[in-house]
Figure 1: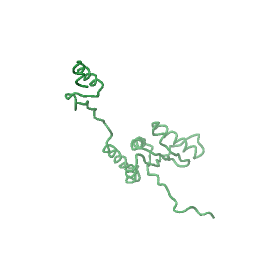
Figure 2 (figure 1 turned 90 degrees about the horizontal axis):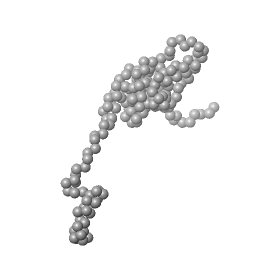
Figure 3 (figure 1 turned 120 degrees about the vertical axis):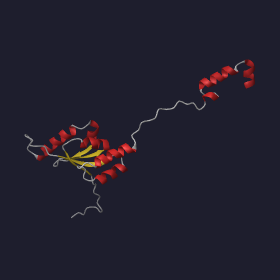
Figure 4 (figure 1 turned 180 degrees about the vertical axis):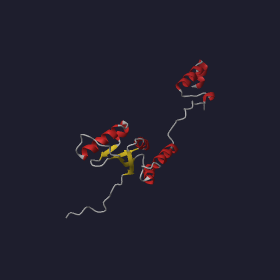
Length: 163
C-alpha cells in the first residue's frame, strides 16, 4: 500500500493526515510531551505541624489522644466546652441560657464548621463536633473555648440488666 501511495504521490499527504490525527508521531516529536505544572498539595508535614500546634494548646485536655485520632482519620469527635457568659438577662431557665450561649458561639463559626457540629448539650456549655484539624483551629481561635477533649464512646460489655 505504501508503494501505491508513493507512486501516486499520496505518501506525504497520508503522513501529514496521520500526524494530524495523532496516530503517528515523527521522530523529532517523540518524547517531547508537554509537562504538567507541578501540583501543589497539602503535605502530611503541614497537617502534622498543625496537629502538633493544636495538641500543644493548653485547652486541649488529651493531646496524645487527639494526635492518635487525627493519625487514624481525617476528623476527630471532640467535646468543646465554652465559658458561660456573664449575666444573661431575660433567660430564666438554665437550658435557655445554654442554648443562647451555644447559638451565639456556633453562629460565629464558618458555615463549614457549623455543619460539623453533631450535638449541642442542653445543661452544660458544650457541644460535640466532628472536626478536621482546620476546623478545630478555627474553634480554638475563639477566646470563649475553655476545653477540648476527645469524645470517649462508651461500649457496654454486656446488655443492661432489667430489674
